Length: 231
Ligand code: MN
Image (cartoon, rainbow, N blue to C red; front, side, top):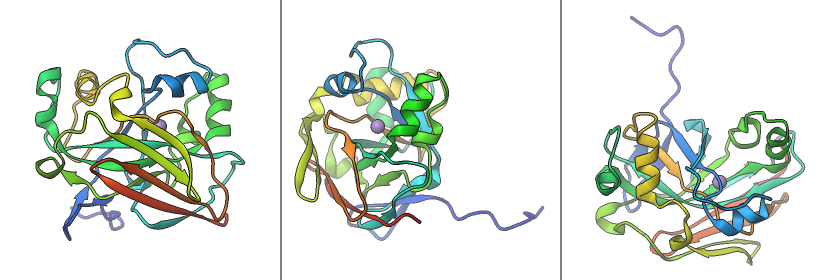
């Protein structure tokens, strides 16, 4: 058997303090997982079961890259997020066993074409065109659990050109990392290389050409992205 054309190289993210890279299989994202962000999006925070959307694996972008301002949007937003990297397959994972499936953690930025997302939301259509576009998932170097532990609290913040836009604590997550892993695994089998973007705190806002956007999480360092001219 041979392929009719060569398969694309696997999408991957950097590993902290290593030349190795971690292959990415899928990207799951949690919607409205901080109460203050749910409110700013015009929704009531609650303990209804978490909901998810996805991005293609090859949407990942490393730290310190220039991302062209994307097509078809005039409201391109940042979203600071903790990223969980799955290292062990599993389905129907009990909450208390969830951490056994984590390879490590990274700092992320869930880039969003907010105008397209909200237009889809109003019409009951899928969010894909607002969320799952090219270069929409900035993910910094993954820190292995052996080094990072499992962060359950600590500052998560985001600046644009040095001005603080988002500033919260991981302990404010409505659904914890353990609960999110367990919930996803009851619907689909989680696989090694899957990433979970765990949701963003309040303060999301627009990015403009020339902006430098920096996301920081205590213990996991920071990632920086520059917005370039429209491609
Ligand atoms: Mn998000």
